[in-house]
Image (cartoon, rainbow over all chains, first blue to last red; front, side):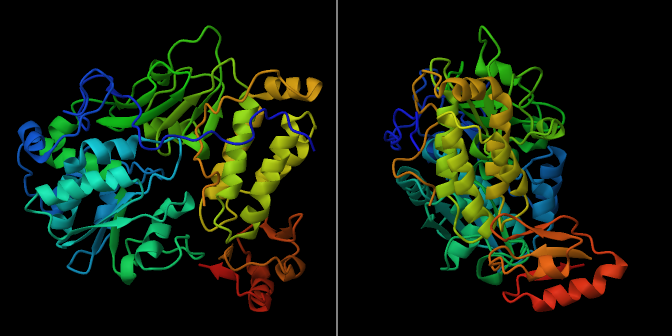
Length: 428
Length: 63
């Protein structure tokens, strides 16, 4: 089958260079790192303490109460209430604290920005959790070499972090899933287990484990440094505070931006002459026709049937072929299957093939929809669910674009790689 | 009780779809699609039989 994909190979993404870093409103997580030029600055320990003061000691009850008071939700993707996770993990010296800095989604940069620019906020958060849980077992799991170097320097600068260890992540997309991270730390293949096990109950080495994403720990650091009152001073009532967004493509604020929760999605995307679809929640997210009244706030988005996931907003420039972007991400998602579960191993490549066929004008819409609808819930992790959501929502919002391809075999626009993909191709 | 599949074990042998035709069908590759995970009282015996028959021990009944 011939394809209209003008550039089927993916140009290299420069992983080393940070995207622009900015804040709408006053920066909090990125305080000291944002200087208005877009080029982020790393905050060392002296600067960090000058900005935030010393880390106050929080007991377990106090930390749970603070996390509950500000309705803190996990920032990795599942948006699980942090207070419930903290309250659900057994305290004691056996317990592990795992900081997940895998950031396997190629479009997302916010965790790397946090690790590279404000590493001490992450360490403060991890130590606050470890102290509250009565443990010294703390491990940071990081893929990006520059982020690892930044955290390594941060740990060396401090006198209170001798017990914190730094580990290299597995470097795969599915390997960043929290249960896969636990497997990886135990020396096994970084894939999610087939039976439901909660890391809080049986995590690293079978011990109770509090594992969360880098930004969650940075927000926890901020929470203990500011106290719940000042933490909740900005943002929406349903999820106070700020959140980090990676905005990609034709948007008003490209790069990583810290925004108060409740900010209209349209403020980040910017005005466009005609409403154009955008992607919310990254490559496991949803294509949406237009921003309307949507606001950046996990509970509100969830109520609207959307998932914020790792916080990626993307809009393909009008001069580019949106369907080629969708098909390329579809191919990457298929390669990203960890190869464990039949419906994903066979279903995702078939979705990718269908998308490629659609691109070159073959009407496989019915097969695509049927296959996509069968995927959710049929894997050890949410990878098939995310891939199906991405693909089916694209089919829906880009139906005019699809119709053009079906009528003419092409839309005449080039593939821009507006949605970034890693050099090596595939998430494995 | 609910029918659950350990997808990392399932190889699509298809016995569950034959023994539990009311609630399990096969997809185009022979992997099970559980249409109704909840097991009614009159299905419990069949469901247990299907769990026992799975050659990969991939099928289970969750409380």
